[in-house]
Length: 224
Ligand code: CA
Image (cartoon, rainbow, N blue to C red):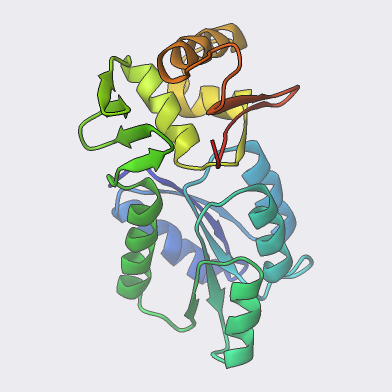
């Protein structure tokens, strides 16, 4: 696993720097911010695979940031908490966090937790939605047991959407995620979505898997 983008929200400068250095050493891409407001701004403007979130922040609290991110996305969120009070943990998990780690923590333990969450969401496990089976390890998609010939881009696009069912992806986010920095326009995305629908949908003009969210982008139906 490498290249995953991790949003680090931590106002203690020394800790933030240590996290940045250590996450980078693991091959991840940390983006560090020091306030809840910046965290939301960056989160909305880019794709992240995981969020490390300090609870005690100036201004908008970590818990509030957690709730707002959770209302937008199912991205794994690990809270960094200064206190180990049982109450704090419960509040943290209630606000939609997946995990928490109490300061002071060992970087080794933190990295192990991050790896576990990344594996859980972006791993090589098969995704099964209705009669569609997506196998990331083999780069293969089966429909009712029959392999579909998807191009690499079509596969990446499907995997990205299907790994986060119900989550709305803006066109910009999908373009950035699948095509990276190369300049392609919305039309390219629309064409790939159309090809993908022709392959995976029973009725491409009335798709049940990949839905268009008018004026925003696309989402993978969580209960197709
Ligand atoms: Ca803090």
